Image (cartoon, rainbow, N blue to C red; front, side):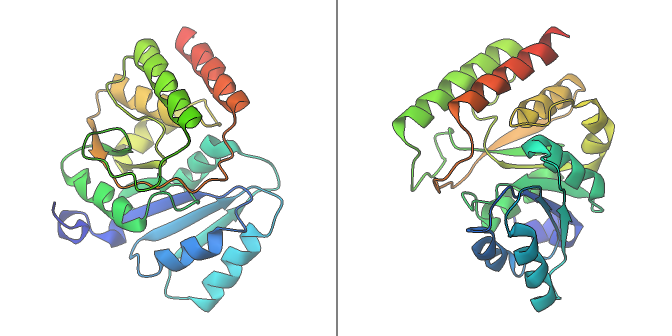
Length: 235
């Protein structure tokens, strides 16, 4: 694999991190991001101290290009990412989860492949994927059932639409973002569907991923995701 510094320099990358009530984990993630040469945009729309922790970190680490966008209203995962994408200033735009399940090294690998595709998504379900700490059995079953339904409903060829590690060229985002209606966890699927329908080349890449626990996704969220996606598909 080539390095992101070759054809996709870190300085040309915007990394968006939705952080809803992540005060317990955001500090360690920020430390891991020290040295990342691109732009980091953190979206804080919760009620805890996440935003103030990020603000303090940016003061203490002025060499890090970090912007924190705070919202008094709940934006949802998709709504937060969309807001970050509109704020992004770089040529390549990606996002990752705040729980650290995907490391910055994996994001750099994802960014690096944007020299050969319009979009790159990380996958936990490819044979080459490395999963040191797996999710519980029920979460894995739930994920597989959801993905099968997505393949049937939307005709997407991907093994894993919900892994929170994705990156795209700016042209793709600029052309389809305003057509994406989803603001919740279903945002990823609709974004991929819109890109697929528009003829963009989005590839899937095996990654190393570890379950960090404390997920904010519940069974009710999964049902809401499917209901929202069905509405979009029917329209």
